[in-house]
Structures are given as structure tokens and as C-alpha cells.
Image 1: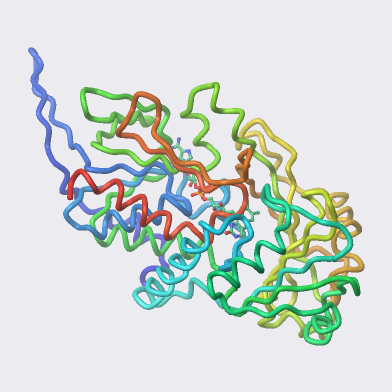
Image 2: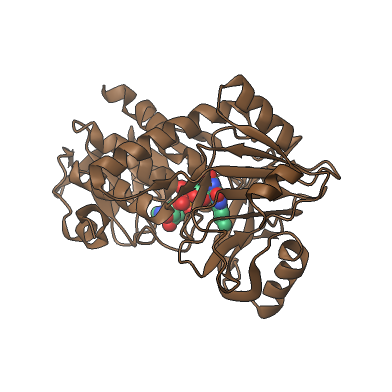
Length: 406
Ligand SMILES: Cc1cc2nc3c(=O)[nH]c(=O)nc-3n(C[C@H](O)[C@H](O)[C@H](O)COP(=O)(O)OP(=O)(O)OC[C@H]3O[C@@H](n4cnc5c(N)ncnc54)[C@H](O)[C@@H]3O)c2cc1C
């Protein structure tokens, strides 16, 4: 294991911060407290990226805080792999974020020696029978193709016949069509978070894990973060708390964020099946409902592939999510999504894991300032498509946050 990939390095080597010292005079004693330039609350996909880019500045004193010990399996950034693709049907304005993120991760791979991005290509399939929408937008397939054309992203369009010739495991209807993007592939989310945090730490960021921030307060022009047993002070705060971000927002804003449980399944390959070795990642919209959808990955272990769909059933909060998966759920997934579509598999589940989306009304990310707290920026890469953009989003936020100190 490479040095960056060792989580103990993060915990064992917490450098003394070079944060400023602030003296406050009280009648009975003098209290000294460190004031960080920037505190990042939440060290998942976006927070760990932002922390890395902030720490890289070197002249800034930064601290990253998380309620768990990232990478962990309680937020939205776990489960072995995430799809990345460039012509993203979610919106043309996201294309450059995806492109930049791939570049950042390729750079981090060469610094760390850890594989973060595996470009196996990606296929988007459309059954061609009924129109389907995804991530809030109708015409997802058509948008993907038109963004690829406009932004010169290499791609090919396959008829159903051509697709089945090349990838016989996808049993696409004969009316169907497919978009193939060679630069798509999959990311290793846990490794990415680990590397970003390790590097941030190497650059001098202080890390505080298993430390939930319970509230945020302004004291003069300094932000005070209340942790279980202590307070942390910072001039600027980035609240990158994923699905928990809504807890810091006023009641009136909270209904805009839906927490939706998602299940990932690892389904066993038929004996001797090699079709999924280094095969492209894939997404397939096959009906008019947002849940008429399946996506998957090549086989990483030679024995199973990871498959999932999407669910938009709301749960009140991340804490209330049911983390166990029943046999009935697995059987339903097989019957309704896999059978007759994805070939070369047995109806046998190696394992299933639970994760969650934070879904917004328009499926876009959210970013803003907390009311009456100009110094606190909040962000959430919402609606199930944020990982592929998180490195560039972190860089962008770091640029904004360093602005007053530059
Ligand atoms: C099943 C599934 C599949 C997905 N597939 C894809 C895909 O293929 N491609 C893609 O691009 N995107 C995908 N996504 C979306 C993507 O993974 C998310 O958009 C992204 O991971 C969200 O990152 P985040 O940093 O906003 O949240 P998180 O990674 O959840 O990070 C939030 C962090 O904040 C911490 N935190 C929360 N509250 C506090 C507090 N009070 N104090 C301190 N710390 C706190 C949490 O512990 C957590 O570590 C998928 C999501 C899921 C769930």
C-alpha cells in the first residue's frame, strides 16, 4: 500500500497548525485561541477536495472536521466505484467540471501512486420505446449527444444491433440506441477521499475526525464552530456536509433537500463469463419513470459486477435510513431491473450496501451563504451525480475561500 493510501498516516500525523493566535481580554483571565483562515466541515467528496486545494496554498491555515472518520460508509461517497463521464446530460455547464476533475485526479494519481480513475469507456443506452428523464431533465440521451457534439467530446452512436455485436451482455431492444464515450470510466471514491485528505494533511491542514459540528455561531467577524468537547474558530467556513447540510439551514429551506435511500448490489457472474472484464461502465434508461433505470460497472473481482438503480422515496434524515437490505428487495431488483436486460449474471447477490442521495427539486447542486453569516459558504453536490465533479468543485470553492487572504 502506498504511503498516501494509509489512513493511519492521517491520524498519526496531525501537524501543529500555523493558525493565528487571537487574544481576548476578560477581567479574570486571558483566553488564547487559534483562528484558522478556513475550516472545512464535512470531508466527503467535496470537502476533502476543497481541503486539499486550500492546504496546497500553504500560506493558509486550514482545518478539516468530520462527524465520522472519512472515508466512511455513512454518507454519499462510498461503495467502491463511481461513474465519470464528460458529456453529462444533467447540464452543459457541468461538462467543464467533469473534465477538470478528471485532470485533477490524474495529477493526484501521479503524485500519490494510487489509482483513482480507471478509464474503461462508458455506454448510455436508451430503449427507444418511451422517452425517459434523468436527474430532473427530459431528453437525457439527446442532451448527452448534443453536449458531446458541441464540446468536441469523442463519442460514437451505436444502433442496438451494433451494440449487441460489441457488448452482447446488454440485451437492448432492437429499437434502442447507445452512446459510447471512450473517456468515461470509473473512479475509486474511498481512495480519492483518502488521498485528498492525506495530501491536505501533508500540506499542513489539521484534521479532526469523529467530531460532529453541532452548531455555528458568529462572534464579531470570526466563526465559532461548536464541537462535542471544544470550539473551533475560523475566519471562513466551508460547510460541505452533504446530506446533513440541510440541518444548518433555516426550517423553510429544508424541504428542498430530499434524502433518498439507494441500494448497491454486487451480482454474481455466470461461471466462466468474461464479458465484464475491463468492459465500459453503463447506464440505461428503459421507461418513463425516473426509477426505470439501471447502471453498472465492469467486474473488479472477476466474480461479480456492481449494479444499481435509483430511488426517490424520501427519508426524513440520514440517521433514519434503513441500512439493511432484505432478500425480497434483492429479488425485486433482479426481476424488475436486471432480468432480460443485463446478461451473463446469476440471480445471486454477493452483497448489497446502502448509500443515499440528497435530491434537490431541479437535481442541481446547491451552493450559498448561511443567512446572516457571510463567512459561511455551504455546498452540497446533490442528486446522485456529484462525485465526478467534486475535485473541480473543491478547487473552485478553495479559490473563492482564499480570495480575502490572497
Ligand atoms: C449510491 C450512489 C451512487 C452514486 N453514483 C454516482 C456516480 O456514479 N457518479 C457521480 O458522479 N456521482 C454519483 N453519486 C453522487 C455522489 O457520490 C455524491 O454527489 C457525492 O459523493 C456527494 O459528496 P458530498 O461531499 O456532498 O457528501 P458526502 O461525501 O456525504 O460528505 C459529507 C460529509 O460531511 C460530514 N458531515 C455531515 N455533517 C457533519 C457535521 N455536523 N459535522 C462534521 N461533519 C459532518 C459527513 O460525515 C460526510 O463525511 C452517487 C451517490 C450514491 C449515494
